Image 1: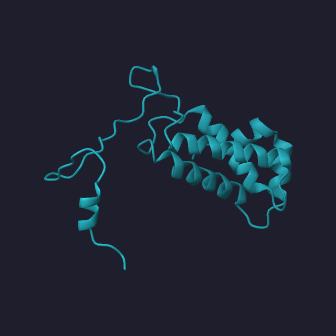
Image 2: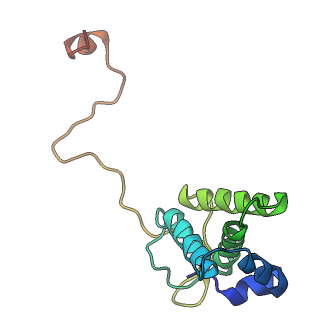
Length: 146
């Protein structure tokens, strides 16, 4: 998991976490919220990075705490909690779209913003592409919907 109970308490205070936990109707709701946050993060991060990550950046710890806190609100989260959740989801979408990178260090303990190597987009072997736009003669030979 990207965050723990201790991380939540350090970020939001032990009293708030205890109050949120007291509102829950099932035992283990806090751990479930943290697990849900981890799975939500993984669903975005896995698009751009190989899981499991070699290290957990503090950025993901913050994201996990905000998502778990949002999920712990029993009825209606406050506006501030909702805004934080929405901001974290937008950040994760940018990571998935490769418009943002996670601050993960490489083997030499140096920060790297590089994404893992991706295979280039290629056409299948045996296909040819003659650049340009199809002309009317070519389009007339294609089957149409009648």
